[in-house]
Length: 281
Image (tube, rainbow, N blue to C red; front, side, top):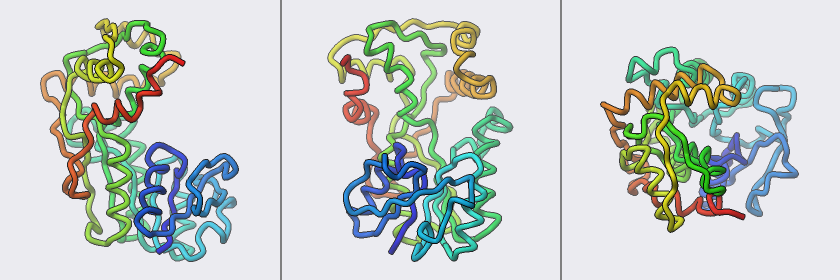
């Protein structure tokens, strides 16, 4: 079974490739820079840009049974080319925001983008599975510079509670859906196994490092002023709305157990896996 993995050098895609290889599948990794892929030996790496059908030559799709769709901008070009070349089965990486479970989701940057990605597949084939993870634990890497340098983390809504998911859990759920057809037509919500306040999330990283991490609560207005140069306004609004809402309605954990049969990895496990990202050089 040959499975095409898009976004193959990203946090989820890299682990998905390794998982598929370990389970006896033949992953084919699509990347714009194959010479820099750094993937395991035995993986067939091909060049191509999801948004540019002209870069998706025969070597990308020949013999491919199914594909993992990374939600890159312009992914419609890839899906159209894949369907035309006979790829019949897709697993789509989306977002929990696409389910529009809360008023904050409707029209948010994530909902608009991921709904379009989902439609790119569902409008062209009925053989799909959609994975909708909530907040990624990897988002906490935005604090890596402060933690490495000893500077305080300045963040709003520290009492809000989210259930961050380890990227490995998303990858392993994707592998399960690609290796069987048991979940065709399903849109599956995924989160980490526990909801933790933002203060608790920082404390988990601190325990991993064996030291206390200074933390300062700031107002949403201060956060916007400090980050507006780096974060587009629609994303800023989405983040602030999410953190505000989870002050009173914490994330409900929906771990990957239903897909993988294993408990989701805790944030402590994620922090241990990423310890090097937070340690001073």
